[in-house]
Image (cartoon, rainbow, N blue to C red; front, side):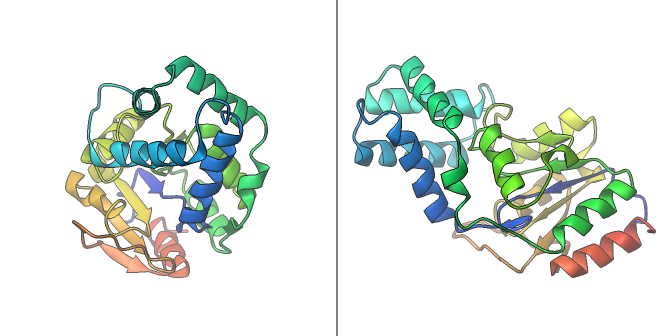
Length: 240
């Protein structure tokens, strides 16, 4: 097994950083609303945004990017012009995302985990669920002390057509890498979204410090343990 992984996919929230997602999403929607409050009230926008995110997670399309699907849904749900909603969203992104950094913290072992993989010259993917724009994903990394440049691919709503736990998400990622899923390791804290990589033949590691268990289908990991145990495993695996 010492050389079987040709890429490592890392989830972000709860895996590489600490964050309380419910409050984060609330601040995210509030920030967007501040740039389009003349168009729509907060309540309808919040409901539409949450419903749109659930649409991406729960229905598999594969024909359009998640960004396109989300804004088409918002325009129809809110009865607003899609181009205007996109322009206001870009205004929100350009205005600065610093208010969303509240509560985001790093995890001590993460720097060593990423360095270990880099020493082994194994490509890294930031396999966060692609329901947010790349600018916000990369900002979350920086707030947690992670350099986004460590990753050969960051999945975002602009460049992805699927979401976890859809098998198509993992197939799309590995296709971009030119690899088979069986060549890759998926590391995450979510027994549903992350461990669904099992369905594609990918090896999985469940980091259980910030374990997330949802209702619905779950999968058993190939490996499970702390961040330190994962680090020890990778060092042995890559013979470092």
